[in-house]
Image (cartoon, rainbow, N blue to C red):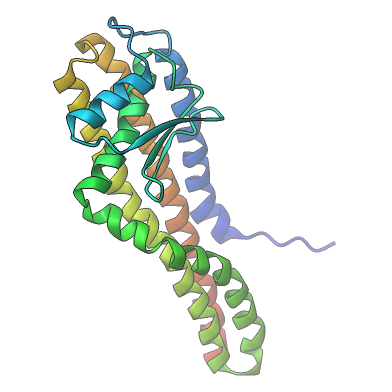
Length: 238
């Protein structure tokens, strides 16, 4: 039986995947650790989120509870902050940090934060590129035996995949900025004491690393696909 070992995946992609998995596990463990540290005012995540929105003059942003654990997100299409079951009614410092972070995205949207606007604008193209990239690469590689010109179909697939990389690159500053806005709002509103804020900071820092991990995986995949296609093209020119 013949076994094929994809060394480029092992060398390039696998370390990034492992880093991403560790980062995700770190978020859950950090959130759990500080879930027992509650704010002295007894405010829930939803209450803090609403107060921060009002402080920024955003009275039309809706807040809803959504199912799941740490499924919190901001939906710009409906101008809604959706808070998970883990944070909506929780008074923990970790929940306050997560809720304030999502409100940070709502503030970005209201203020016209450029990286967020660009990221939202390329979502349709990114989704299409993600669907077309692998099929185009496979077709290009298979047809490259018929002529060098067909290798460009594979390069077109790599170009489509690059949209995913651009999306991840734009996600990173967007998420870091939302966290900075969250911590600033928490401090200015006095929602957490200095000791309680430690938990919020560490949860947001751990969450940020998951986006670093996602970028690392996408970048590694892009380089792997580019090298595969370049190697096929190089073999054709020999």
